[in-house]
Image (tube, rainbow, N blue to C red; front, top):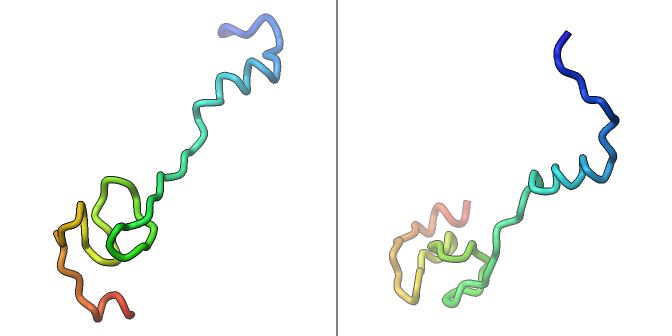
Length: 65
């Protein structure tokens, strides 16, 4: 027989341990150029701007379909 717990684990201790296992949502900010929501410190997927400069050239055909 392997090791077994001597006492039942309370709901509070179990939930306190599992408190860090939750998922977090990405922090969204509005793009300064187009106003669309985007992840902070990333290039805007809708317009391709980052820090006031265009760093990606996006095709208009891809955005519409």
